[in-house]
Length: 313
Image (cartoon, rainbow, N blue to C red; front, top):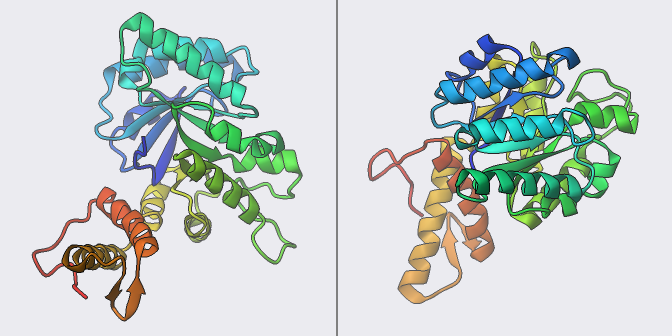
């Protein structure tokens, strides 16, 4: 299911105050983190707090996910079973970190399915989000993306990826000196292609310098330009910027809607598969591009402002 995920906000599962605050934020997705944001000695307590929050708090229309610990840790199975058994009916997706093989996804799928069957819930409703955070995961990303019908997103993890590859930076999501282009073009493009081939979304990870709005905007613009659907935020002040960057402007949306109108009119009037729009010849390929922008604008809440709101060719 392609839920809107322009902004995916990370919330430490060990901080009840932050979790409660997240219910009022304007992020498309909120995920409660049991992995990196929680100290080793706090894992069990954080798990209990996350389950309680899912049961007791109202997250409104947001997509709600929980990031469990990795499949190679002693915490994974307890995270998954306890969270899904006790609060799966309040959950949209499980986020898997450090996914290296499709087997990580397949195992998670089967465990969730068993819980859904035991609880009498709809099988397959809970999605899976897979984080690609090292070389092994990137090499296998196509198979990971297609590993389960539950798969909803591939997520890039810039911190662990940079550490595993040896990129000389210390700001998560930043860029190193010494390279004339952008060092993640290949990574982003491969993830987007893998995601689109599987019919799912691709999401960029966080930008760690929460005081650098210009840097956040630049990195978000880059990932959007390469086709990614959204980006993580780790501070509430980042959400508005990320939502803005990953939404078409109203002018872009209006033009896309007008292009769709022109294409439909040509098809209805003469059965033509091409039409003139604003001095440009448009065809089925243009329709597909315009439809993606139009859908993104509708998801962002755009509506026509009267009959003349959408300009006609």
